[in-house]
Structure formats: structure tokens, C-alpha cells
Length: 377
Image (tube, rainbow, N blue to C red; front, side, top):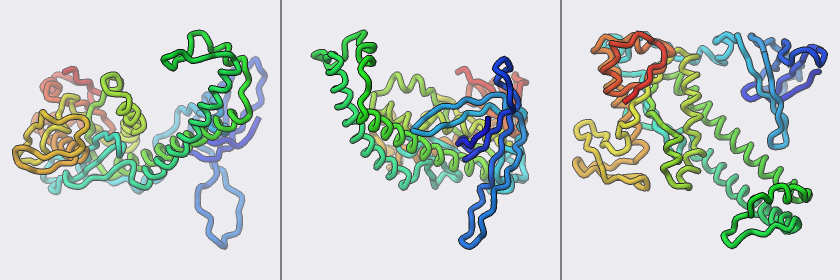
């Protein structure tokens, strides 16, 4: 069995499986080869791709169909970390282990803070004054255009589905809901060709939107990890946020891919030997004024307020940028407190630190570093 498949992160991949009987296990050794991704020059003669053997061992793979294409999910074990980094030379090498050391790091560089945003995905700052976003204006414009086009197809899909239900004899109730137990009755009526075509278009648009956002997140997180020694993020309980917020905000929160951004930072920090620092979940990053001379907390701030003026120092703040600046300042404070307590072993390369004031009080009593430390405040 052999063929060329699309693999997330690898592109076109030729997969060859050793012949085996049905009685043998399905996790037999597999050989996976991928061609070069180098761009072809205009007048360069076409050459056959030179496959390279990827290090590691494939124990299992799963095929599935999505958006009209077949995809394979590979479980790869015993793969060296060096083979995971595409361009190791682009990773900045720092001469210090503790970023708070004024002798080795007089310019206070190497620390970035990241705040989740329903509009931009996330807003990051590396100096406490300027910001960068995960989803720039070009990506958001393409997403908005795809959303408008997808909404048109979804309206057509709803009309065709209603016609299918009418053919099955299913009628919605006065509240617009379907009667219970009508699923088998509806599925007994085959889908029309027009309905199948519209469903394929909707699935293809959704797949393109997924890849567009995933590509932007990968580029952003990779560049952030390469250029910084420590990355500060806030602790988000997405499950609890989804329960307590309204439906529109929940949809925008999931579209912003907040959980995916944090997940990528966790394993990429381990790959590049960086430190990921989580600020306590009760830290008021959005409500606190980021002015170092003020830090007044605006208790009247609501979720719909995207910009506000500090009542104490009268400085105007943009909500997401202000939260990123506060996280950057809080990250430096936590790092300096760790350094003053002599707990710089916490900041070992590749470690994930979940910090808060109550957690810092228990630092010296813990000896499981550089493992993940959970804050229970």
C-alpha cells in the first residue's frame, strides 16, 4: 500500500506501508518521505524531488475525509527535537539564564507578554509600549469575506434541508424546534444533489478558514518563541468563560482560537528551550491602568467597553493593548521576585511556570522544577 497524502505541517507526503496480513497489528513500521519545499526559479530546469527520511517512528496513522480532501493524522514517537525545528539558526540565543540580571541583560530584553483578544486572536508586546497581533487586517478581511460567502450557502442549505424535512413529513413546532425522535425519519429521505453540493461548499470554506487561522497562529507563535527568552500569558479557563458569557461572545472567543495559541506556545517553548510564565487568573489585566505611575483599577469597566479613559491619570487605553502592557509589567515583577528569592531554577529552559502571589509564597517549599507548577489560589 502506498500513495501521496496531505499531512498537516508536512505538505504532500508519500506514505509506504510494509505488506502485512490482516492478522498482523496495524501499527507496523511505516516509512514516510517528503519532498523539498524549496521554491523553483523561473528558468530552473525541473528536477525530481529528492525525498528525505524523517527521523523517528510512526506507530499509527488515521485517515479521514474533510472538505473534499483526504488527510492523515500521524502519531510520531522517538523523534529528535532537532528534527522538529525547521530553521534553528533563526532562534535567538541569549547570553543570560535570568532576564532580570541587570549585568547580563541591561536593556531588559527577551520578555514578551500575550493577551487573548476576541478580535485579533492575541495581542503581544515585548517592550510595554508597542503591540503586534496574531490575525492582521489582511487575514481578518479574508475571514470576513469567507464568512459572508458561507452565510449565503448556509441559507441555501437551510432551505434545502427544510424541503427534505417536509418530504419526510416532519413539521417544526410553534417554537421553531423539531419534534423529538424525528432523526431516523429525516435520515430515511436521501439528500438531494443540490443539498450535497451546498454541504460540500460549506465544508470547503470552513476548511480553508481553519487553515488560514492555523497558519497565522503558527507563524506568530513561532516568531514569538524564537525572539524571546520568556513569554508571559494570562491563565484562561475557557470552559468556565464559555458557560458565563453570552452566545455571541462565545462564538467570537472560539473563532479567536485562544486555546490553540496557548497549546502551541507550550510545546514550542519546550522545543526552543524557552520559559512560559502564566500570570494568576485573578490578575486584573484589562481593568488596571497600565501607567506605571498610576495602576488605578477601573471597577466600572464592562465587557463591551473596548477603550476607556483612566479616571485617575486621564490616560486613554485600548482594552487589549492595555491588558498586554499590564501582563508585561506583571511578568517582570514575578521574574524579579523569583530572582530575589533565589529561585532562578524555576526559570530553567523549557519550563512552564504558573505563577501568582500565593503561589510565589510556596516556591521555596517545592522541589519539582523545572516541572509544571500549578497555582491553587
